[in-house]
Image (cartoon, rainbow, N blue to C red):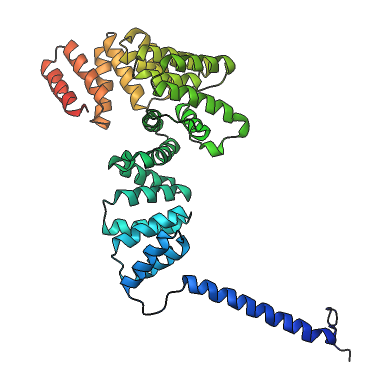
Length: 383
């Protein structure tokens, strides 16, 4: 019977004592290292809450963050309602990129103190890092509403990530509002400029997701946009005109400039939206904004064909319905205009522009009581 043969090379018995000695030495060395680490991180059983908190604070002061996290965690096991401990666990784990742990700690703190705004902000930032963008948007928006961005040291990181979340959610104008607040203090980071460019061009991508070949375009668009938001309108116009020259067939650039102009001069905005339609004739957004801007500017004759074209491609868009209703009524078709605006209000009772339009059209139709009611509703709804 054949014996089983090992494929391993035979060991030289003369070398075994030396190898065993080396192994023993290595084991002793590793054991020594392990014991040294344990001396830094291990907490003796039976230590009091007060001892743990004192050691945790000392470790934090010494910037020994892993040890501080360990100690705060142990202290929380003894006293789970200790708010200060949950705060430091949130802060320290966020600072060391332990984002799931930071989310968990912040959630514990917010259960105990629902209005702990800094914890809500850090949870939102941590949720962003783990790609939970819906939760991040909810937390950061709530935190900002309660003053989290009032501290200049934290404002930039909080507002920037909120702007990214808003852009991802398709809330582009709200994102631009955040960039406007950032532009008041100035920013020049290529990443933030690209983020502004993407938001202004109604793209939901993050700057990190943009192809390197396209990055320059979005940074340049953001640079022009930031100049406008900072109040340098002439500089912004020059930068945008250069963009239009360099990228004559690129969609959404005129859209971006029109959005910035809209609150200042709807007619100038309409000019940009009309140019955007020239570049992208089937752009629902450009058609919608062109019709709406012309209505706000009071140019109902030009608004009517634009609104009819927009309605043909996006009949369910509320802004399009408002533009078409007002344009119809103001150009003589009162019945259709009123019905269109009444339909809007039936679906959205707080649409201010629809109420403004109805007040005007009811007045033209001689329906004074209805017109008065709409005017009173406008005063109630207006911010």
